[in-house]
Amino acid sequence: MGDARFFARNGPHALAAIVAAARGTAPLLDRMFTGVAPLRAAGPGDVSFLDNRRYVLALDQTAAGAVIVAAELRHRVPPGAVAIVTDAVSEGWARVAELFHPRAAVRPGVHRTATVEDGATVHPSSEIGAYCYIEAGATIAANCRIGPYVSVGPGVAIGSDARIGAHVSISHANLGRRVTLFPGVRIGQEGFGFAVTATGFLSIPQLGRVDIGDDVEIGANSTVDRGSTGDTTIGAGTRLDNLVQIGHNVRIGRCCAIVAQAGIAGSTVVEDFVQIGGQAALTGHIRIGTGARIGGQAGVIGDVAAGATVMGTPAQPRKAFFRQVATLKRLTRDPG
Image 1 (spheres, rainbow, N blue to C red):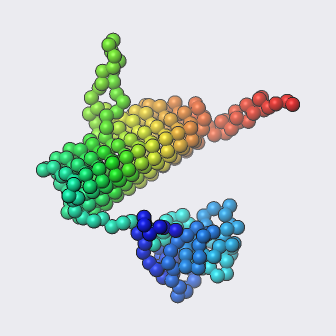
Image 2 (image 1 turned 60 degrees about the vertical axis):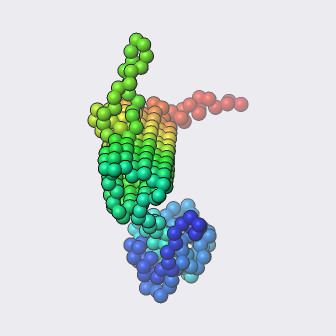
Image 3 (image 1 turned 90 degrees about the vertical axis):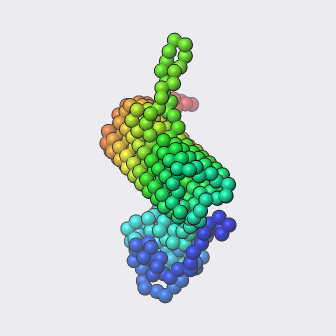
């Protein structure tokens, strides 16, 4: 696991360091480990994990040297393996995997083919990749990695420790710390705003910005339009999957998760900790309450209450949706 051509590798690491990274407990043994791997592929030098009871048979048969598990599965860990017990298995696995495969270090400096205009500010600890274009007035803080062919428009501010992938364009935007934009992301372009006239469409100037909070990740080829009058905002810790569309003036709260091909129309408010499934579509000018969950391919045309789960088109409560599906199946069942 972790092809050396593509992933940095660190180690070996002592069991004590691995347990500390997982924030778990384990017997104090003097053992070293060389990597991480899934249960079926792991060997005696690997650390693995189990966070889904459906795969408990794979745990019984694993050859891993150590396994991160919840307390109730400790007894299923084979005798030859060390059980690393934690209340947060996925979190522990993430930290241990990062211990062995840390993010590639930033290589400070500006590539010889990049253009940094006079009036732009790039911290000397940051890396500017090949064929980048950093316009006047842009600010790039410390320890950022800006990939190849990235365009950063005038006045854009990028916070420290950002990771910006290849072919990203950023304009009219402020980015917080530790923001990650995967390849092809578009931030700050004009929103879909126009007036209808007797002779056709008349574009309305889009005069807002995009404000992105700390620790936001935006997946490949996703787009975030700038505001038309106010700002488009994405709260700290939110994650957007690939191919997500965020319209102008949308406000997204903290720690939301929006899955691939979802689209949110202009001026909709998504409060904190909302989950939106793949290919869901949200109309404009509605409010999605804190902790709501929207199923994949749902069509949301009105407000959703905090904590509610909705599915279908038009979106409706989960129980009502499945009741209608069951009724439709009965009505269309072949009597023969």
